[in-house]
Length: 401
Image 1: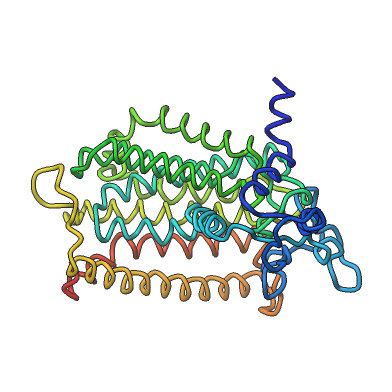
Image 2: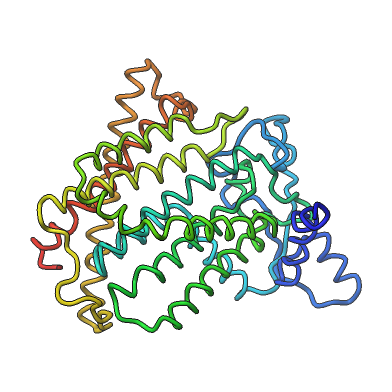
């Protein structure tokens, strides 16, 4: 058993998958050419173009090749392995699939379901996304299992290299989102279940495989992530309707929706160095809290924006007019959310810097828990509130809904 787990966690297994997909270390590519194989594409450095991304550290553990600085340059980062891409269609497919699992994608995509399809489905998805992401992030920083080593693996997302590996929260989110839609949609929207199942399996598989291709997770990380989400779905599914009633009708709901996520953000496991996991988790919890309060407010106001008529309703027809309205809602709603984020973030950071006597020039101050947690929580709670309460009402005023 332990031998099998060690095999699934082996970095060489990930590197082998990458090579099969056409992502090759420069050393391996040179070896291939010396044997007369076809020349690959131009060489890329593992560091993102434009230099180190925000979030790089002066000291990190075995999860990263970034060890220490010498003459202002991270020794291991400067010697980050270079790679060649030999299969561009697969490369772009897996990069796109990896993007489907990022927190910012869900914060951007889930509101579109609220605006253009069904707020009921959006609420279910936000609830499950918040739950599985919190569980996954806490498990990562509790188990503290490293990500694959580089070399032999090529790592395409160095920003999150300092985070721990198991479980893959991309795999968890993709599995939870896909199958929550599959389980919730039949009572709301008319569609063929077999087609929905095929789409759910395909999207989940693509996101899971993308984590191997990008070199950010082992096979064990991905399998555990998908299985943990499956267990959470199995355990919570019988209580979804009861939670819906509590969330929408209980007078305690908005209080619980704000206090519990804030408490979980402040009590997030402490590490011996900074990573982005606490901030990302606070972002998710804040967005979930704001949406939950917003859905409760809409229910009290008697305007939930849910589909009219007998359920399940037919899927909206993809006419030119429908696409134009959807695009307009995306632009207006996206601008509202982005504007909210920018304004609330700036105001909350200024207030916290002044409260703690921190100069604005101190770029590292926002990593401190007493600043990072409240500013991210307030910012994304505000984003969730604007998404669930305000945006649809603006659409009505503009004739977009």
